[in-house]
Length: 346
Ligand SMILES: *Cc1c(COP(=O)(O)O)cnc(C)c1O
Image 1 (tube, rainbow, N blue to C red):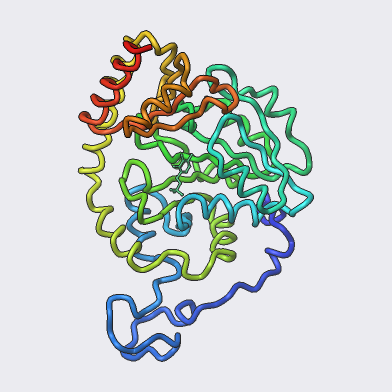
Image 2: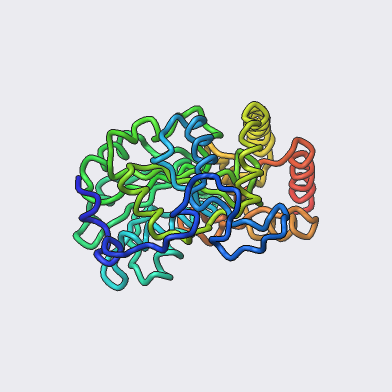
């Protein structure tokens, strides 16, 4: 597949901004090239625009070449850049499955790109007939979220594999929650599909949401396009430096993920015993989608007692559902305690 033929012509023709640090990549004694303040401080230099050290480190962890990694200011940057690289405003479209993460359609709408929607099944699985019926010549990107937010389940891999073979555009798989499953995700098969983009983030399992670092993994052709159109210094030096240190703590991350997964099981077992709970949907993520009688009133009750969950009750297929992040053991106990009190008083 010729990826470049999918890219907007103005982006192909674009001559990107070249930073001082793009032109000289070595180590020098004196830097008089970037109009920085010469008086030393930890922050007086611009950060590495291509985040070379970070990509080497991430590449080692994810077992992928640095050239196949894009680093963004959160996954949201990758979502926005993909849409701007491939979709002509007022003409092209993206396809999302519903219900899903809200940023795909927000970024598309900001860029005046139409959003086609395919409803998931009642068990939040892909509906291939409906998906294929939405494909037309305007469609450039399909966004799939697996495990899906807000439902928590992995999407059917067979269906996605088939879509990757059939669809003559880009398939983006958002794996923000992949660390909470036993599934290896789609990175291991990236080399088979030049039209596949896998997105991951350090915001969830790695516990680094405040640093804002999202990753996209894809063929070099796609990564080169994203690098060409990103803001030159999109990842600040503090984030680069701290993430580099934090990525050494994979063992600790895995320990926390295991605890969160155990807590997820425990919370499911507690929740299904409550009379107000109708369904706890199976989760491969660090949250549970829970259907309960009077979700809205429970949401307000919890908020009144200083526990904030996510009200998804007005989202399609999520009637009467709250999305509950797995907290610490103590936090989960307090949640259950409040839900029991609510049950007893209603
Ligand atoms: C939380 C989340 C992200 C993370 O976004 P960042 O900008 O990297 O913090 C991405 N995708 C989904 C589906 C999410 O739920």
